[in-house]
Image 1: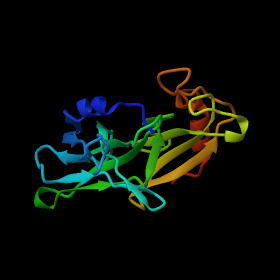
Image 2 (image 1 turned 180 degrees about the horizontal axis):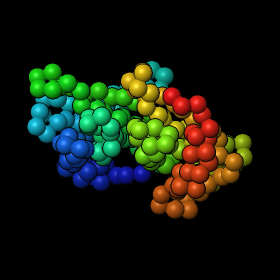
Image 3 (image 1 turned 60 degrees about the horizontal axis):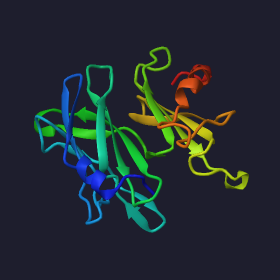
Image 4 (image 1 turned 180 degrees about the vertical axis):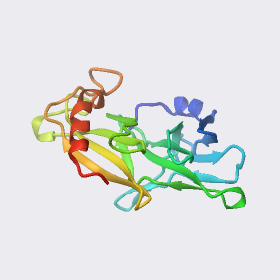
Length: 223
């Protein structure tokens, strides 16, 4: 898995990035790595003014093996209602090879002063590097940001290669105020195949699928 060389990863690890969301100032930093540059702990997002208030990306697992999302972290502000602040945070796992896995968190600041803490509102959501994701603001559907993801379905029997054309699974995550977290509102398989990374530097599925996604979401009962 993973296209980057260890030297390229080390260059990424030299910098933390700073993001702000409606007044929320945050700093993200990569996790620890081993001698080969692979992550041994999750990346962190901390409040700039309260550096002890942090959220560390949880690990994942495959069978008995645990792995860490510690590489190439990013955060972006979200348009959150109710005068509160939130960001989307992501970090990547790799252990060499042609693929990687990126986990996402939607982090909201709760409490204040000494009681301030960061809450992750998103269940486990992770995408391969042959995927697409987007945040949408659609007030007619929800006052909260929607998270859309599209990841490829690898049909080995059809002779598909890793980055060839594939069908994709579309998921739409919507915030449920009663549960105070995001829930899977919609999931479907695309009716056509889309190009993978063999044909382009990035995967573009959600833009052409957006009318269908919004149509399906609007047909659902309001939460």
